[in-house]
Length: 228
Ligand code: ATP
Image 1 (tube, rainbow, N blue to C red):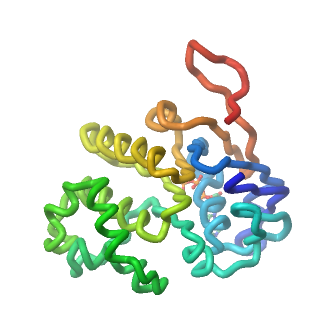
Image 2 (cartoon, rainbow, N blue to C red):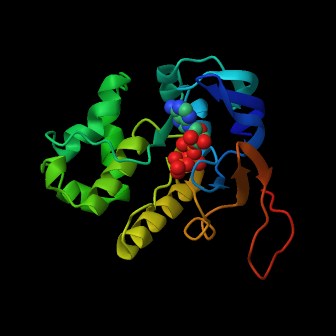
């Protein structure tokens, strides 16, 4: 198992946001995390990244307990996330933005990983020397995905990657995410509905008011509980 979350509770400013979360993703599989705005998707992703301390419960990654591990150590374990907002540094070039997490986390093979990301998304390489502020919103989204992939060589958590993205670009994002399967990555895709992730994921988890349950596949072939 790659990610294993057990009985996790998380509070923000004394208010319990996540309750008794149990969720697993096997290595190399993709999972959807589907829930309305405010359901707790971002909070769960931030907890997995070590940006919010849990009240109780555990998070293990590849069998190692990472519940209390600082966020940068999780990056060193090749776990990363793509925030909902793009958070690129506008004045830096695309390549500089891409390499920022490698510098911040002292990743020695950053340049090599950059080449790997550029091979997955050649269109980013084409505007590598442009400043981030010169890109369209959609192009910035691709760069944000690429930037997250540099530290996230093993597991990547995508917070509403399709939000506000035009259909053509959503298709391209889907194709890149689908390609990650061939690269062996474990992937979590948070979405408010499963319109984009349904075709990508191996299993769906529903999140509602801070509680997670395993969802049902809405395809005609299978109406049973999803599993991996
Ligand atoms: P969205 O897409 O709207 O961000 P989400 O499913 O990602 O939805 P979260 O952002 O995780 O949801 O929010 C879950 C709950 O936690 C919401 O009720 C939200 O109001 C609350 N919350 C999030 N951050 C804070 C904060 N800093 N202080 C207080 N409450 C917060």
